Image 1 (tube, rainbow, N blue to C red):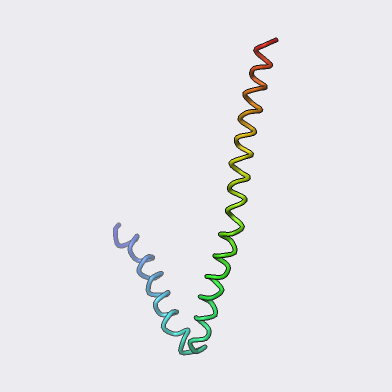
Image 2 (spheres, rainbow, N blue to C red; image 1 turned 30 degrees about the vertical axis):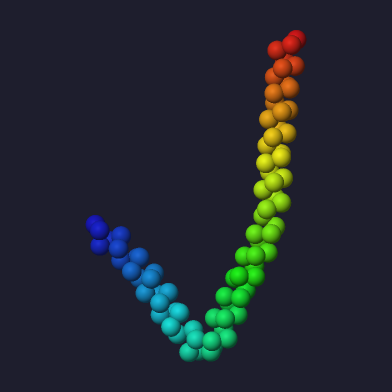
Length: 78
């Protein structure tokens, strides 16, 4: 049973190692370098975009909570 779970993990890791070894020999070191630069650049941009969205989400949740509180107070006041 353990071997059945271990086999796909080993194949996945072996596939990645072979790919990482063969890519520079086929494209030169420029290919992996461009991919790493793209990943770093897109990661920085996504981090910059994600921060304001997180703040807006927190503000939205706060306002929704206040709305529910006021609504429940109005219902119980009647």
